[in-house]
Length: 273
Image (cartoon, rainbow, N blue to C red):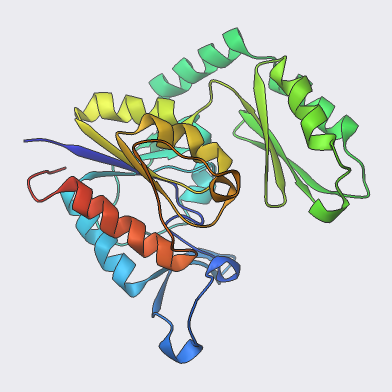
């Protein structure tokens, strides 16, 4: 029987914080929400009740692979409806979780590629911190010893600073992207699409579906057989298009529900996990 793999970004694609909901209707008509993530005892991320049912159905009919830039620790705070995914892609493709445990073979493959093709993380991190200014730098972080990011006061960022950083990083095999208040510096080989291909190989999937909203999702969407992006996010701002990519008009949590319906329709009734 044919197998469909669904690799979907989570934050602002399938799950939404209160600030990202973008409810288009009066509160009295707003959809009922289900909390899928707690942080320090407080609700953090939501899906609609209809989306929860769709997620459960998707987990039964496909190989559903949550695909995120979050670290494994951050990802494991989320409790999605339906069967627990066997695979999850974390740290922008740097970690492949199998039944909740990071796959050591994949870690070794990723580490070998980064050592061969990119400048070391320490060099890039040092440059990030050295070139940033305390007037707009809020936090500096490293994820899983794989990539670095800054949390900034975006309104105070000097014009041209991100472009100059991008040129510096490009020469060293790294990419830079500004997403909301975060500036990511990520090694070029560290991609969600590479991890998706690995899961497809392991599961024998013959159809890959993907969705995402951010610049770090672009390679994932372009690598899938079919893909969707919502009407919000950095990919909407940049106007990413491709023949197999569907641009949805919905924004906010309504887009998450629409994406799940599109996944199920594309998977069809004759496919399985």
